[in-house]
Image (tube, rainbow, N blue to C red; front, side, top):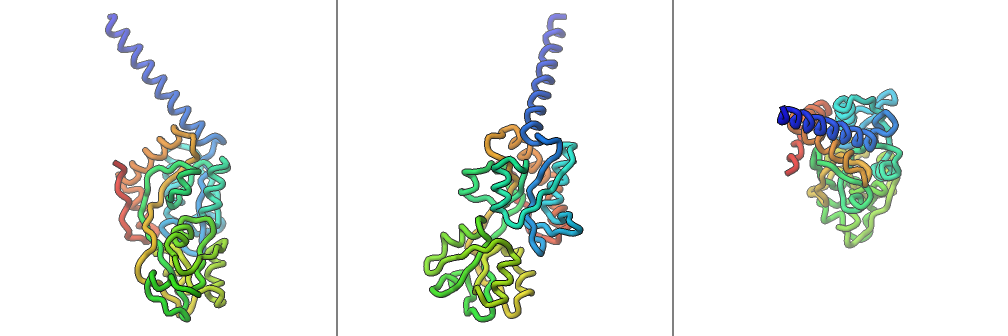
Length: 262
């Protein structure tokens, strides 16, 4: 009888502790009663960017946000940003609860990353007037290189360019306009995103090679360990169960799912 009572007490404590941990996680991850997810939009979809259709997001990260809301049984509010730098600002400030974005060391100082869902690489598109055919050939004096402000891509390009510099623009639309109007020679962006924009700038092309290979991951604000544990578990399960694979397939991307965290 004493053993049964002891087992019952332990079970009660475990259940109570589990409920307390779950409550703590939900307070950190869902303080407003709805999951506010930062998504970054562009004119064309990519493994990271969503597109807006009737003011609603469509794309890989929109599907992953929906899957996370379903797992937590909470409504999802998509909060759209024109670049990932603004999404980082919002996550750090507590204006959103979760985000998906490329990982770099600068961002790790400001927000907490969970697992990658996919791996990508960055390269350049160049105008017809540019002779550059490779990443290395972009790095020469006189080349007017642009990238989206406050992103991993522009920071990585800036670190690798030795003979020229890179200037910021606020959005993909602004970058494409600059190339089309002859105000820039090269645009740094993820390889999977660029084919659509190459079609929009007559004579332009992607160069060979990449200046950055990077993971794209789920993230929460720093100082929220319970929330980080929840999104980490979600992403690992989503990769195992095929949720990430289906999101990539639905968007038309055959790129591999990022490896499971060890």
